[in-house]
Structure formats: structure tokens, C-alpha cells
Image 1 (tube, rainbow, N blue to C red):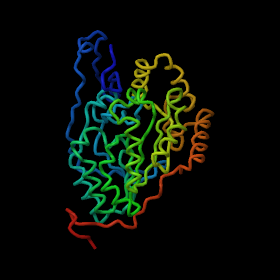
Image 2 (cartoon, rainbow, N blue to C red; image 1 turned 60 degrees about the vertical axis):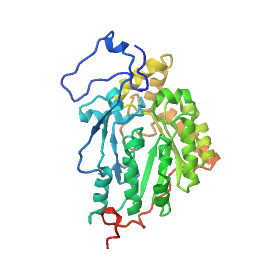
Image 3 (cartoon, rainbow, N blue to C red; image 1 turned 45 degrees about the vertical axis):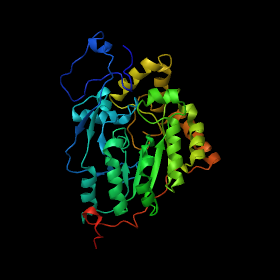
Image 4 (cartoon, one colour; image 1 turned 90 degrees about the horizontal axis):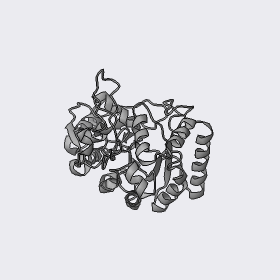
Length: 350
């Protein structure tokens, strides 16, 4: 079977919550279907959009995720497992069945206007990318940023889509009040690797251009070199940081890959298709970084790993940042300018 064109996952592993599942024969007619798999967009009628966070190793109090599932199709994405809670697979379903929160801006406005709301940082793309391809048409993330700009609500964004540069107006307004920062995720400078690793995300060149555009508009912007995958892209870490710095990044971040639950077979299948000769080496080194497992969910360890391989990567990151003059933390955002406004922005509430 040839790889699914334009997709990261090459299989749909069984949903761990389902008692029954179907398996397709290896030689089923679908294998020869020349048509690309189309994405289905499904409306999410959630009545709230602001999620609280109490994880000790994450620097934000709230998150907003306009989409569930992600068409970027990154085979390694830890968020794939969240699609199982919706009754879908963490495999192809995750990137081809996208749940859309069309009312997110209105729900966010109501949440921020509540007398009980205490301003604190909101993260966007805490789970799936808020600038995935359909955002160009739906503008849900843009609508949320427009609300935040009116309220002067601090927001931190992370994305691997250059579309973020479209919203320099709202982000720039927030930046005037120290209420915005953006991480652009760059996992490789090699366009061929990026194309198969993150098939529907922006090219590395476009992401660097987005860093430059944000920096030119006075918006604090950094690079997220995440995840670093041993024996695949980890050797690129110094070059990624240098390219981002040259483009205008002022801070940086990295993580080491982890493969929770059904993400492990999805990524393993991806290695079978594209790097079969490296598969055991890659998976073996991931295990070396997580105490013999492919995943570690322990706060404080899950993002950076443990053991000698993780220590070497950590030292390389810090040495590169010192040499380049990159901060290793995003700037602290301020809630000092936050204001509650009436729906539609008609005046301030006192």
C-alpha cells in the first residue's frame, strides 16, 4: 500500500474506548483508490471554550482550542489520543475529521466579561494548532484574537502555520500592553523531511518568514524546536535556533518526542513507510530518553526526557542559546491592562 497522500498517519488504530472495531484487509480495494482522503469538518456545539489548566509544568492558567483534531497531520503528535474521547481513531481520523468550534469568539467574549473572571494568561494551540489550514477560511482564531485585543487579554500562541502573520494587527495591539507572545514551531529546516513529517503544515521557509513578519511588527516571537526526535531531526537543533534568531526570534523552547497510547503505532507505521532502516534506532533512542518506554507523562520529565541522551540534548540547547543570545523562556505577559468591555466592544465595564 502506498502512503496516504497528504497525510501523516498511515493507519487508524482501534479506539481504546471501543469494545468493537473493524479491520480492513491488506488488499482491500481502498488501497488502490487514487483519490486523496478528504477532510470532514464537524460542528462543535460546546457551550464553553475557556479551559483551566493546573499542570505544574505548563506556564498558563487557561487555554482556548478552536479546533479538535488537526489537519497538519504530524505523525508524532501527542494530541492524537484526545480524538479517542470523541469516538474517533488517533490515526487518520485525527487529521481528517476535524471538530470546529464556530462559536468560540462569542463564547470567549462571554467568559471574559463575567464578573467572576480573573485575568490570567490564555494559551492557544495548547492541544491542536489554532492556525491549521481551514482557519484561513473560517477565521475562528482571528475572531478570538479580536476579542482578546478588545479586552487586552494576555495570550500566548504556538503554531507551525505561517498564517499567524495574517493577524499582526490584533497581536500587535496586544503586544503594546505586554499581552502577547508567539512561538513558531520549527522541527526541521529540510523541506523534504518537513513535508513528510508535517504534511499539511507550512514549509520551514514560510515559518521563518512568519517569525520575521511578527518581529517586524514588534510582536515578541520565539521558536519552538519541538519535538526533537532522536536520529531523525535532533542534530538540526543548533541550526534551527540559528535560523530563527536570524529571522528575528528572541526566545526559544524545545521538547523531546514522546509517544503516548495510540501515537506509538501511528508513528511506528510512519517510520515503516519513510525510514524503515532507522526505525529501531529511532524508537530505541526514544526509549532511552523515557526510562525504557516510548512515553513518560510525569510532569517535569515528559517534555525534556531523562537520562544521558536527554542531558546531552539539554546541554546542546542551552549552549546554542547562550551563543546566539536567545532567551530560554518566553517573556512574562502582563494582566495590568486587562479591561472588561460590553459585548461588541461598546465601552468599558466599571
